[in-house]
Amino acid sequence: MRVLVTEDDENLRVALEFALRGDGFAVDTAADLPGADEALMVNAYDCAVFDRMLPSGDALLYVRNRRGAGWPLPVLFLTARDSVADRIDGLRVGGGDYLVKPFAMPELIARVRSLCRRDMAGQAVILRCADVELDTGRHQISRAGVLLTVTRKEYLVMERLMAATGRPVSRRELIRYAWDEMADPASNVLDVVIARLRRKLKDPPLIHTVRGSGYRMAPL
Image 1 (tube, rainbow, N blue to C red):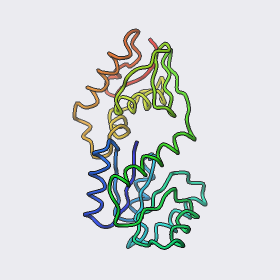
Image 2: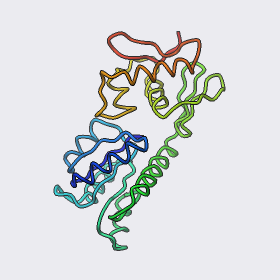
Image 3: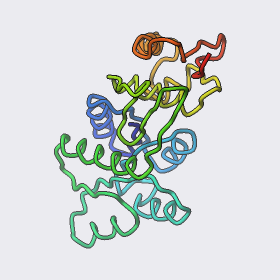
């Protein structure tokens, strides 16, 4: 699951990034609303965390404007404003949750995970390639009806490959999708995950190397 954190306090932003990464999330960060805009233009997220009062404006108004254009992404607001009216305002503009500072980091992680799952449950689809099925709602992969045991990273790489079945997916795109924009595309983390997936999927092979491009999921 990939999360965008927009927070102008550098210490808190770094702490949020560290905690979410430690719990298995891919995390991108922004210090202001223009930075959030840029990240949202180029990446797909499962949830966004916004400090409400930013130097560049009120994130509540920012989310309200995006909701008016049909933006569906789940949002968690962080704020020192703890009145009932403030919380109601946050929910009215389309915030999925509202957490008052100071907060416990485990609570924030639990709330972010809940928002991500809530969104995925409403958008669950089954991706198929040959006799392999990937259930995006349950985060499960099976082959010929047999459920496979996969790690979080293995699932994400498979999800991206199966969403593009038949078309090559670049190494950079796979790494950005399963890790985040801070991951080094030259590292071997992707190769390790691909090798494990091939062993778990067994024969006939479905994940093919496309020289100079990346990988492709397709029957022989």
